[in-house]
Image (cartoon, rainbow, N blue to C red; front, side, top):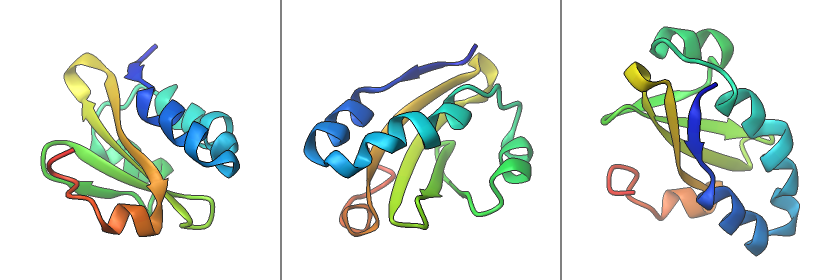
Amino acid sequence: MPAYHETAVRSTSRRRKDCACIQFCDLAPILGTIWNGPEDIKKRYPSASFLAGNRVVFNIKGNEYRIVVAIKFEFFAVYIRFVGTHAEYDKIDVAAI
């Protein structure tokens, strides 16, 4: 089972009540899968964007929300770096989070 850190999810869920489904519906397949490389992610999530530093951006809930994760493929670890609305995403520096 992959390792992950869910502080960002809890923080967002507390701030926005409509994010509760993210925790269960959208994150489970992302966090519960062992990704061997970017090609595995692209097969399952064609709209995922890949950034420097092994960061991946997932558009969820009709692109209303974005999840940014950092993945360490060699350790099968997924680190949640950001969960928020599209507008909130536009205000952050993804490389710095």
